[in-house]
Every structure is written in structure tokens, then in C-alpha cells.
Image (cartoon, rainbow, N blue to C red; front, side):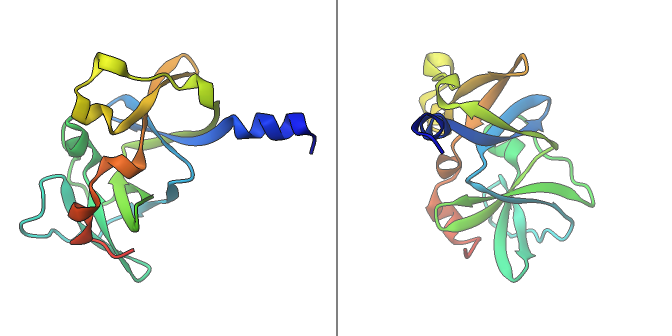
Length: 158
């Protein structure tokens, strides 16, 4: 590998693009462990409204988050099977509901633009930025800032 190739690789990254209520979002692929169909979500009394419940994922207890409710864009329909993107948030594995996974894409780091004053400060911390992909806008989320780890501590062991 030449120095030029190494320089190009450090300026690019892969993202997982997914849809929620028609809006495109993405997470850095380094945060995403897997995508699974989940049907056995157990409700937890007293949990925050955005926590759908917990599941046993191959011996590990994991919180499942209603991504729409967390982001303030609605709620996930209660169905038999839910598409869940499993991500690493701090020390915890967390499942985030998604409507569909659209693609895995390679983007240049400089393709991500800051959201600036477009959203409230508390929401802006969840977003790394916005980018254009195939002519559409994609909101790039920061997995580490989607949830606070104190909330997760009671629902997951990772």
C-alpha cells in the first residue's frame, strides 16, 4: 500500500444508512455490531418511554430503544418482529429499532457538514452532522451520544 492509498483510507469511513419514518439516518459502521429481527422484547415497568424493553441476545441482556421515540419523530409500531440495529454505546450493547436498512456506504470525512443552528443544542449533540448521499440528505448520528450510559446501566450488561 502506497502512502497515498493510506492517506485516502484515513479520510474515509463506512456508515450504515437506515430509514425511520421516511428520513434517512446513519451510524458509523464501527459502532454497529449486527442487525437482527427481534420478536421477544420484554417490557420493563418504570423504564423511560423510549426503552421498548430488554432482550436476551445470545446470553447478553440488551436494552431495545424505540429510535423514533428517542429522536422525537413518532413511535415504533408494536409488531411481532422488530428490525433492530445492535450498536455499542459506551460499555453497553443497545438495540435501536429501524424501519429498514438502506445501505452500507463509504463516505469521505469532509462530506459530513455540521448541523449548526438547525436543531436545538440537546439534539445537536446526538448528531455528528449531515451529508448528501445519492442526492438525499442523511443525518449522521453519534452512537456514543444517543443515550446516557447511566440510563443504560439498569437495562443492559455489555
